[in-house]
Amino acid sequence: MIWSRVANLSSNADNTTSFPRVVPAGDSAILIELGSEIDPTVNDQVYSLASDIENTNINGVTDLVPTYRSLLVNYDPMAIGFNEMHDVMNQIVENHSNRESTDFEPVVIELPVVYGGEDGPDIENVAGYAGISAAEVIEIHSSTDYRVYMIGFAPGFPYLGGLDERIATPRLKTPRVLVPAGSVGIAESQTGVYPNASPGGWQLIGRTATKLFDVNSPKPSKITPGSRVRFVPVDSYE
Image (cartoon, rainbow, N blue to C red):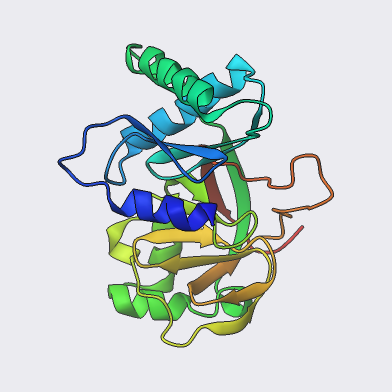
């Protein structure tokens, strides 16, 4: 229910809306919108704001969910009421907006990737669509530090921004029933990594042996929102 309301609120934002804005999202969450479009500067502000809220140690806050341009703050209404939470969030947002810098330093996560072959069965599709060789696809794909805009679709699945437009490729017309864990894919202007085996329709160009998601770990996801991912080509898994 909360997520459907959040989606509706997010879709109503347009270029005439004033940002930032703090709005209710159901009976136990507040949505803080910082912009209307996908923008790296706005995304940095999202994670900087999340850090501010975490450091404030507000009684009743249960979870923070950052996205491309907004931050969902979940809270326990039995511990803190909406009016108080709304006032606290507005104050934090105001203080954050008055700062000259976001003070956000992203962590860079390196992932060794075996490109092509059985690990990247669609790399020739991507190369053909781009009109270049598979080797050039690898060179281009591994030459960028990708921004982790958000985690979604599946637990631990990172949506990475910054893909070179030369290798942007449409999704598969028919999704695979099972994509191996660690598969690196491209879909339109984004790239990502499947943390677990699951269905999927992205063009698979490689695979990493690094374990990306462990439900039994205190921090299940190795890749966190706001960090950067760097793909490092390797010949084989060590």
